[in-house]
Length: 234
Ligand code: DC
Image 1: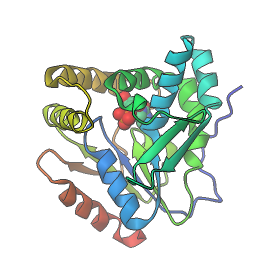
Image 2: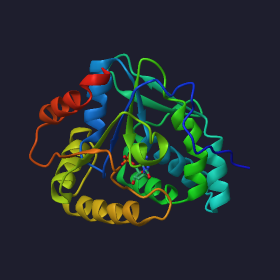
Image 3: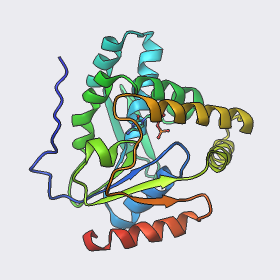
């Protein structure tokens, strides 16, 4: 039985949250890490949770939706800061799988399991538990619409599919992965389509979100805009 709640916890309700939603490759990850570092706030990389569920289900050969949701509910994970690089490491069942879950294949698996309503329900409570003092930066697709609907600062970060594919390509190359720009563009477009069209918590802009198009902005320019928008709470 999956336990899910639709309301944010009243005990943590006063802890400020900045939600950052948007499609793959819009620059959310870099922005959120920078915000968390500057403010000294906790960071929720919700995409990593969906990637971990996709990874585990694939590894264990689980294909039925109830079985995948069960994995999501009982996911044995820990996120720790690598003291050498400052990078957030994903530890699954005691193993460092940070690199394994960053592949495009795993992104695709994540997008598929993310379309299962029971998986989303299973991860809801876990995501809300990241809301701790002094504050939280929440990176995802439904942070401002579903997980933290009462967040005082909501950002929706956009960029054209071409720009996002280029960024993802450069990111993968930098990390030493093999990559093809054309293939990444196709994968991003396909993933966008799935994330936008799924019936359960599709990627959507919260009514009270500040929309920033990062196509022609540097990360520092985006960062300054967000800090300005959040100035009242930081
Ligand atoms: O941000 P990312 O690329 O690591 O996310 C991987 C997939 O997980 C993405 O295709 C959609 C899904 N996802 C989601 O549905 N909801 C979230 N809050 C975060 C990610």
